[in-house]
Length: 597
Ligand SMILES: Nc1ncnc2c1ncn2[C@@H]1O[C@H](COP(=O)(O)OP(=O)(O)OC[C@H]2O[C@@H]([n+]3cccc(C(=O)O)c3)[C@H](O)[C@@H]2O)[C@@H](O)[C@H]1O
Ligand SMILES: Nc1ncnc2c1ncn2[C@@H]1O[C@H](COP(=O)(O)OP(=O)(O)OP(=O)(O)O)[C@@H](O)[C@H]1O
Ligand SMILES: NC(=O)CC[C@H](N)C(=O)O
Image (tube, rainbow, N blue to C red; front, side):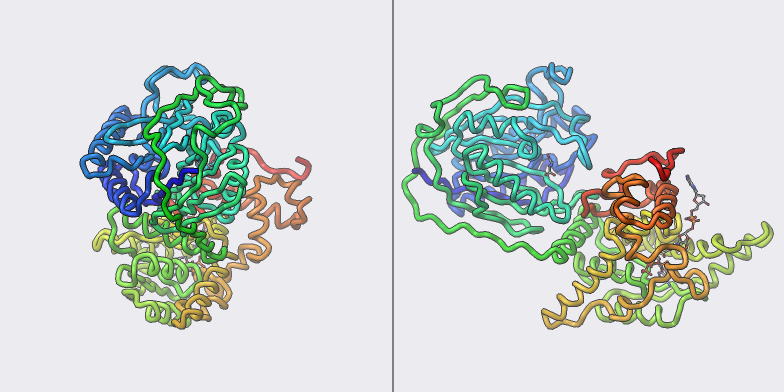
């Protein structure tokens, strides 16, 4: 059996940065070469970044991607990396019409190329296009039906792209029929809590179906609301995960595989031409020999199986990664946020410090007449523990000036007066952003976003919302986890205990508590999860055991707040259904959930 040393390059690309992404491919290919790898694979749409969204609709972008690919092939050869096969995702135009979806030739395709000795020696266009959740790939791409098989050092290697594994039939079935020795899958699979276990199970199942090991390489890093966790892995043909990369870090996973030679593979010999893909389509198998020469035997390294972080550590790392990459990739060096002495801003400040370093995090306490002395002290204590650049700006004179300006109109009362305080704080933070170039972080959590519990153009004003997909229950859990983690490492807990234990309050009116306006978070969050993430209707929510009166109240709050959510800044998606691209509802809607529906 020939051995192949493969390298999976889990790298952090940037959408739109074709040259920068090509530099990454070049640098990591050289590392793979230095490690003695014969093949190196990069993630989905590595050259263009993923997802490029409507950039795909521009001919200029498709042309730039194609040109960048050819430049990269030549560059790798010039740099002495021509003898390693490089699998890289890029955006191409379909060479043939796609009659099944009524589209002409020249339409965009999500493609993987194999680069070898300065040439593009194979192209594989994604067959199954995801079109649910955050994915819109019917909008952008036409599917591919070609299935190239490359013989590399005697091993028959074939390609798939991400969703190709998530659907039954298609390329996995064709891989079995073609008797491939190794199935590579290049991915842009965004993080969600619990998804990595699902991926394991999926890759294992598909490897058994394909009758070949699957090498799965995923992107890492943040792109707007998506976070890629990496979690690259290899599953052997028996469905055993034998290697796994560390999550949330750029890394090269090098794995030695004993693989059957092409001549031995497949019960039907060397299948070529159209093959029933068992999904109602047929795919055309082509074969090309790169090197038939088997490699001389070399001592195999034992594969590394990186340990998975526990769920809280993984979620926290996802938020840190999303925040770091959003800030960095959008050209900011520093952030500013209002630090109230409450738990939400405490957690956001801690995430920001872990993402960017304390010197890049500016915290501002902005007490009003309703702020307790304790809150101001708690904010100062947190800033001191973490070393943020902390300021105290009293807002009462500005609030009073607004009241004075509006006196002639009858003045402000009740909620209007309460919200003014939040708006003054928002205005001050935006002013500091304009003057010093800090990005404003907002501190709203998913429970608040769901119920509209924030002031428009007040505390919801800002550029990035690190915990917008984290429920209040999880805000407490993560804060406790982060403190425990510090203690485990012998460091001072970053969040003062009092901030975690005090009852939540917006402090916009005397003695105000969140519980005056919202159900207790222990009751609210499970209802929100079922209504928002599971799309349950009223009858299903009640049947699931939720109190009907709470259900009615929560549904009303959530439905009414759609307009507010649309104006919320982006933030990292960490659940199966985040507000934004994942959950799309009309703002103008007369649909009301009723007891009998
Ligand atoms: N369909 C629609 N499309 C577009 N705009 C719409 C709209 N419906 C209302 N609006 C606009 O929205 C305004 C009402 O929204 P807004 O001004 O935000 O005010 P509103 O939602 O009425 O009040 C803010 C709520 O959030 C709570 N809060 C505030 C700050 C912090 C926290 C916290 O603990 O974190 C909680 C506060 O206690 C209060 O319950 C209306 O005056 C109107 O201008
Ligand atoms: N006194 C304050 N000083 C600075 N920022 C404040 C102050 N009060 C509110 N903010 C900002 O507005 C956000 C909304 O805070 P609010 O106290 O109304 O409720 P919250 O959602 O419970 O947040 P937190 O738990 O951070 O207090 C805060 O997270 C903070 O960024
Ligand atoms: N880019 C893709 O095709 C991703 C779709 C896939 N279901 C995933 O989340 O991993």
